[in-house]
Picture 1 (tube, helix red, strand yellow):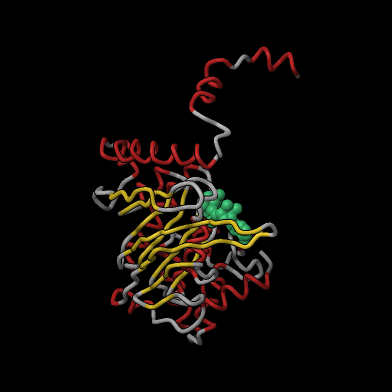
Picture 2 (cartoon, helix red, strand yellow):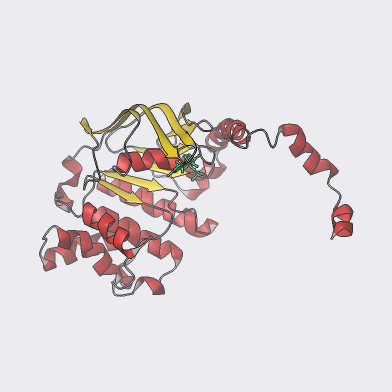
Length: 307
Ligand SMILES: Nc1ncnc2c1ncn2[C@@H]1O[C@H](COP(=O)(O)OP(=O)(O)OP(=O)(O)O)[C@@H](O)[C@H]1O
């Protein structure tokens, strides 16, 4: 991402927000109704998403999971206000989304920090844009950095941070501007498994403290179950909602919950729903018989001889 587009994105996020302490009184309801979006391409159109209806209640944590190319990012980008629906509507607290706004923060897989600013300066940027005075900016940034376990790193520059730390700073920066809604597009996709688990716990802790609504896109079934109150499963492109699964696991959730029978039952159900759609998304190139053949008939000696 260019520095200019990064600046534009962060500038948009810095418009008029309520102070950190007023967050619990705010809403954050997402309603997507009969949403469709198609892209114009040099040869015609690509229908990315069709007829999607979903809701996220204030303070709820909801994930979207589905095969590659089913339109998950497209929906998130429409909610963020970067794309307009071709049909249907996208509303936040009853108002149609007609562009980016401070009520929604968005986090992408790639880290989008200003490399020339320290961790705290990155977090304070949006607050500075809305004219919050220096001492208050510092107080709010430090509160959030503390929640994310980053207090000791406030004077570091991004280049000195690990991937997990950079993404934590990104989340803190998005939260500093006081959104009611956090939209995350595979935010932990580039992280190793252990860091990912820790990030999931940090994110749920922050979500519970700040009482915001979260819509989280992931490819990872365990991540979706561990984090969410509900999971929407999408079909292959054009993406629509295939299933809505409630996750009735008690909170707070400890990592050991993934070994519980309730978790494993949810996992089995989601796996079979997604596998079916992933095979469809591969356009029939791979079917169950072909996969069986790969597993049983593959001969390493043939491969060695052919090299
Ligand atoms: N700007 C664009 N122009 C044309 N087609 C696009 C554009 N952006 C996305 N698409 C197509 O729309 C479909 C949905 O893309 P999208 O990135 O939303 O899917 P996704 O579910 O997020 O995929 P992934 O899981 O692989 O990230 C895909 O077929 C993609 O190729």
